[in-house]
Image 1: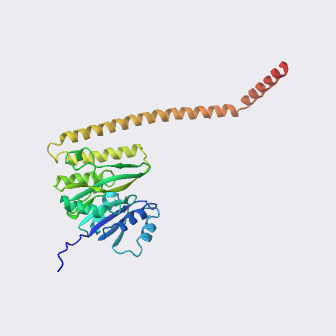
Image 2: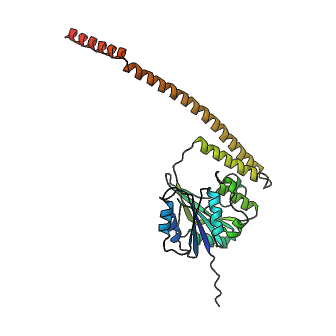
Image 3: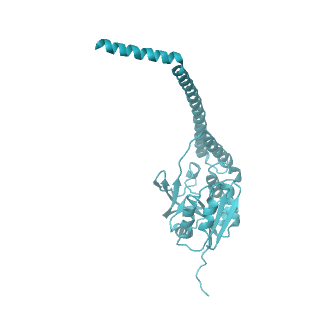
Length: 304
């Protein structure tokens, strides 16, 4: 009998919402991994574009692929749905507009063994509208409360998610991955950094509308309320968090005031333009213009 250690099955959950133009590349980046014991679960979170057709074409004839469609619910729900359909000893969540390096899974698994870690995260290389390599911090249990430096596309042991699924109260909010990792860390699970690879993270055009800023504030308030009493001695970090949120709210109010002023000025300008148009369209204006032209011709004739 062979003494070779069994290689664990790794489940990659690709979540997609209206990413028809990108999802094929995400799928191909998983299929091209140099770690071969992989199953793929693709969760289509109610896409209204051609995502379904692209996905089905991309996985045709490929084994160990599960396709799941659900009504649009949000990222936490889609990730939880993918987890429930998975069988892997480890999971990896991948957004459909991102791309894995060929050694992403193999090197992350190796790092989990070396460091006896439950969560393995990597550096992140941004592409798209903005290009940058973000070198992540070695894990620090205090700094994670200031900023989430752990990407949702990390290699995660199954037991981490089995006891700590994504909070579906955040389905219409943001930063559910930050909340997930805070909860996992507070439960005693260990993260570690893998520097041998990176995630290719697509930067999409940002629209800083009032509604998006309001969602951001609600998201952070939700996280703050959940975690403020979970870790002794971390009040300074969460106090800083609260100051940032207050600053966002003040900025939002000020932005709204400026927008109202701009709207008022814009309305006044529009009314002025309408009045000018009416004046220029009137018979009196045309007579004035004809009279003005006649005077100019007369002055020119007089000079000659």
